[in-house]
Image 1 (tube, rainbow over the protein chains, first blue to last red):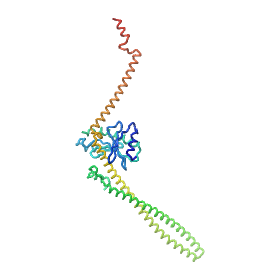
Image 2: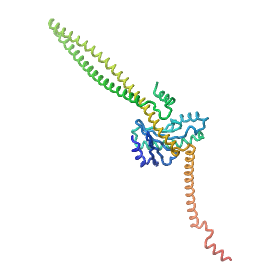
Image 3: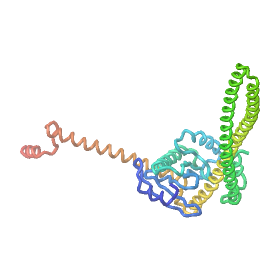
Image 4: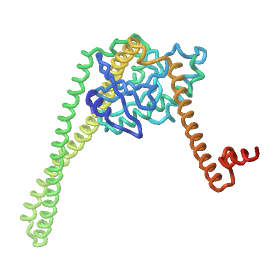
Length: 135
Length: 227
């Protein structure tokens, strides 16, 4: 699984645990696949395939969108949450807080679908759980 | 410096700026070449080790056969002495002395092969460790670089197109609305079922005559007759 177009067309017709996937390729220096998981459309996932891994990122919020006086508390909270959260971890990408998961390039379509559904669900849950930090 | 420390330094430093590569392509290529060369050297060392081990085994075999030969000749010498053939015994003893000299040489040879294999083995182990470390480092650098490029593409899209990522507050409200509307639907469904079940009960009560229609024809007729 190392071609984004191939993955895009295959995952588009795939159904996993009652969820479907709607994909949009964003062309650029590195092509990115924007994936919406049905029933969890609010938190799209951005997927890229590199030499070493398949990377899935969902953006939670911009640093500007959170209460500035509670950033340290939020960071602590996210670090503590990363391990117990299944398959996903928190990170900061540029100015965005993000939740992400990485898979081996040799992953099956089912593993990727599992990752996408889990990540979208984790992202949705996290945003709600972290509401108090959002302005 | 360990790899993670290097990455952290890169993140904190100038590479923080989007688009700037952590390591330029040229040095990446040199690094890859170094790994490739180390692997070739490792292969040579492994081949060398196989040869030395083979030689060591051959010497061991020869030592065993020399020892057997010495033992055999010692037997002959004793028999010659028993027959009081001093001259023959001396001849055999000379042969034994020669064999013993050969044995000593072979033992020295064996020791040198053993030392060689030990050195080669530890060199191979060290080289393998270095290659593994380099490969891990290269993978991390490449990952960081590709992630940086990929996220750059994503954030560019995000900033160019507002709909790509809405504000967190908006997403949150949409999630809540959807969950509320799902909850509403669920409740509406429950209510609907209750209504239908309620209707059923009404029908049954009426059919059995326990509950009567407020406006039945009989009632109307009876009322009219009273007038």
